[in-house]
Image (cartoon, rainbow, N blue to C red; front, side, top):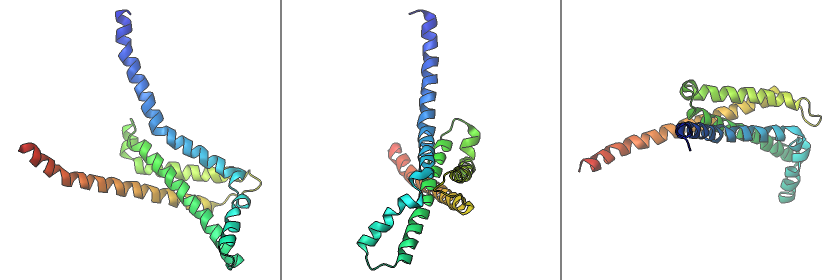
Length: 177
């Protein structure tokens, strides 16, 4: 090994570490976006998720068809809320730890913009799927789900910081003795 090889080695190691960190930060976000994209196709169309209605009807045979339809509707919209809350949480995770100062500082707004844009593009994608239909209302539900996810991340972050502040005096007191 030459001296030149030794001086290049740490820079390569730093570059590979930065790539691994970026993949660790943004990989789950991209993977979850792919899962949403696949689910937006024919796979999770209402006709394919109607198995939930059959299961509910089997478990509760006396329930009216209207209540079963309501159950199916609520489960599907709850899925919208949940999948976009997860997307927002992953975006917040990526942006809060980003190497870009602007993303770290404005993580909440950046993550919500990602959620809104992805929700709109998801509905646009669904407009091309024969068994699906595009709905601005679904995009709004998705955006609200994203907002809920971001509020949970914000709340948990503040709660964690508050606990750390309470522990800090105890740690200082133990260090002083």
